Amino acid sequence: MTTPPEASHARHPANSNNAADPPLWTVVLAGICAFLNLYATQPILPLLANTFHVDKAGVSLTVFASTLGVALAAPFMGMLADRAGRRRVIIASALALGLTSVLAATSANFPQLVFWRFLQGVFTPGVFAVTVTYINEEWKAGRTGSAMAAYVSGTVVGGFCGRMTTGFAADHAGWRTAFVVLGLVNLVMTAAIWRWLPIERSAEPSEQPGSLLPSVLEHLRNRALLARYGVGFCVLFSQVATFTYVTFYLAAPPFNLRPALLGMIFVVYLVGAAATPIAGWWLDRFGSRATLMGAAGLGALGLLLTTQANLWAVLAGLSIACSAVFIAQASISSSIGLCATGNRALAVGLYATFYYLGGTVGSTLPAYAWSLGGWPGCVALVLLAQGATFVIARWLWAVPPPQP
Image 1 (cartoon, rainbow, N blue to C red):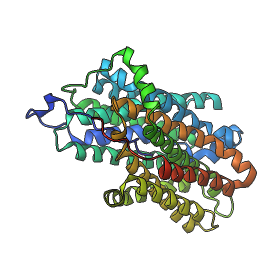
Image 2 (spheres, helix red, strand yellow):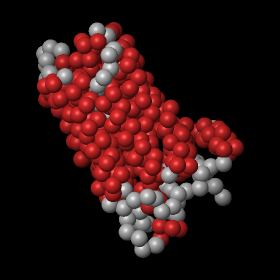
Image 3 (cartoon, rainbow, N blue to C red):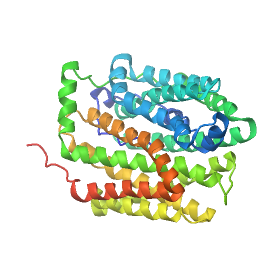
Image 4 (cartoon, helix red, strand yellow):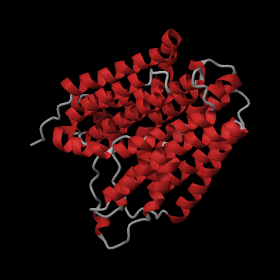
């Protein structure tokens, strides 16, 4: 999955000098590191369920724990980076992600695995959230967009490669090897980031501790922001629910896919990423509200296609549903900064919390829908989330007028 939308940070005066921008590929590596591990267990959930003798709700905790860790840690990583430095937090977090992945391979029981997955979630915002801030502060005006696009591409590649690598490695050498491989890849990329990512030239001033709580309450009283927080919850709920439980669907008859092939289904993420530029044209022509409503309808169509007992129909449906999620994210990204009356960075941090809480709930709640109706039951639950997105967009999406 990609990062939540970022606010428009003010450029720091120090960035107007003639110093060269940091190497673009370093933030691509940061994007890969951030999302290589987060959803890596999705293609091997059936394997883990059999290995540890847990049901679908239980094994989904390997996704629940990581997204919960992100939701809890995301608002605080920016404050930590203000004090310790952007580059230092990015590198320390990437290093921790690599080490916790290797340590996950040593898990003697299922609770230990869930614990290491939770820690991976805690460290993830230290890479993705802080890298967004680093880009906005360190790239020259007029080049930030290119750097952000490169970073987002890295997050998409990381999410895809993490799942594909896990599925392939687990199928051929076991789930422990899969975690070791991911950990070693993370550590190699961390070494490259440490070697070539420059120390930040400047940083935004941090918020005074006493002003944080009033700012949080102000954002939570902002109806337009709450609408975006609600949509963010529904968007990641839909994405995580779909791609967590579709693996059980495809591992069972009539598909009977092994972990390596389950990992390959996430190539639809690349299809979704390629289709996302269409969202820019829609946004320019129809605005964020109409685009979001269209994305909700598109996602519903894709989900209905997956109920067909045909692998190609399922893959087509997943591609459409994934594209709809990326389009919805673009819709939020285009308007969230307009809704915050102050402290936009905190507004985005709170968005990340609601966004990943949606993923947390989406990793476990569908297990109960599955127990009632199998994959069609899960689809029905996700369709409710798509409906909630449509309702919020239709009646609660208005952007407040500019402050005088």
